[in-house]
Length: 356
Ligand code: PLP
Image 1 (cartoon, rainbow, N blue to C red):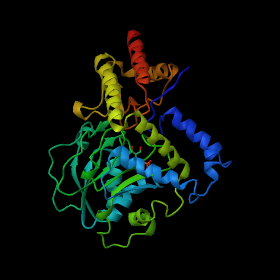
Image 2 (image 1 turned 60 degrees about the vertical axis):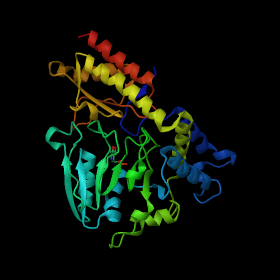
Image 3 (image 1 turned 45 degrees about the vertical axis):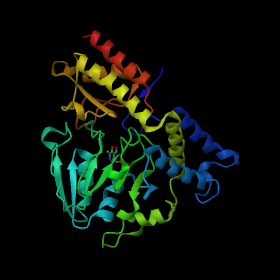
Image 4 (image 1 turned 180 degrees about the vertical axis):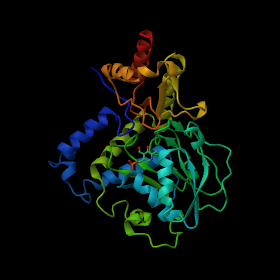
């Protein structure tokens, strides 16, 4: 039976990217050695790092003056690396859910941290809007896609201070105006690669403004100066990122990714809104995520929760259980999810409706 991976991350990647990674692990570029065995400083690996960095710039249209880094530690380490490098006196955070809260918690170790806006009052079912950003902030931090709650900031906002974005779960799903941000970061294990590498796109002249001593590995300048090769980088996930970036480019880049994401989301939200059994959890329609589509059973059908999960699993739907903070179901539709996969889920929901 064909399986469709709706997991929230690590998640579905293009099959050819997986195959190329597997081949490189067996024999890299025909050199008779595995990609996992060669030195990151070898003449064989260096072009991988350089092309991957270059393709991030090309695919996202990154302006001059930014560096692309591939680091370890996940987005979670960035939660403290960001304030270590950018927080002088006061940082502002938009609280749109669990990941934003975790980011804010770490910033508190480095200085005053304020919540500029929040959607906690309604269990993060919308993205706050119309809030004022104090001009004395060192930066404003936003989480552009809230993987758990299924809300997404579809446009890059204008703010009077440095803007920093956690784009772990929506990077490469739409064109981004990188010039609006001083730093964009995320764990790669959604739209870029397998788990194990973290991407950082940082504006070079925004660095070096804090007086604190930054531990070597946490100082972005350590990595920008060394082309992201200060220490041993995660070579296999970087190679997967490279193959995935080549795939994205060949498909037509982020514009194509955005078009496909909208098609998938329209189809699935359309069914959620139509089907008598289900409803979406995000209250504000314009904030509905294209990447993580969250829905629950309507109250009168709530006892069908486990049964629908079993029904869907038997039809090949993988990873659709909602996060425990939201409940219900979450169909994550990252770049490599096909429209065929979403059609299969929609027909599964329709067949289940007919039974009730
Ligand atoms: N930020 C967001 C929006 C996420 O979705 C996740 C993980 O899913 C993280 C941060 C944490 O990423 P990591 O597991 O790479 O630390």
